[in-house]
Length: 109
Image (cartoon, rainbow, N blue to C red; front, side, top):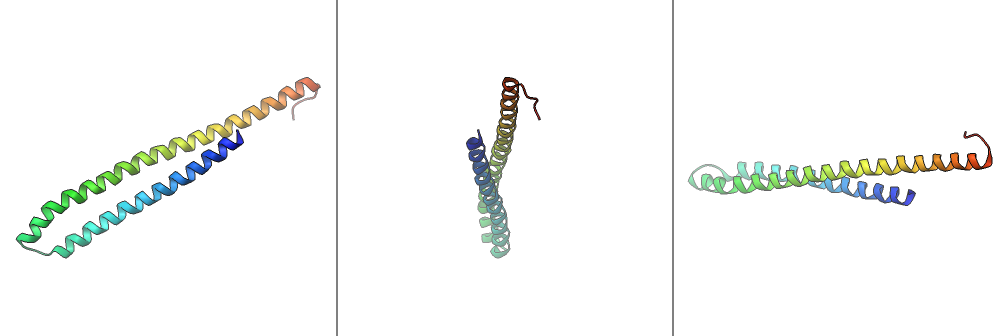
């Protein structure tokens, strides 16, 4: 069981790093949108650019948000799974000690 717990811990750490990258990507996309918005200027051409670029940027941010939310859910479930493994490992160890104590006639400590 301990090997599984280490595996889950490693996976959890890696998923957390991916989530951090996704959050940073979202922040970068928002910044790029703001910079592009300021750089475009005014007038008909700027309005035409914004009308095309804004929906694309919004969809990119929405996609990153969706992926980030899904990854947060996966990380949360992986964390709970790792906690269950640790709890199960402790319970099995306690049962093993109790069984040993029962066979040897000693009391559990």
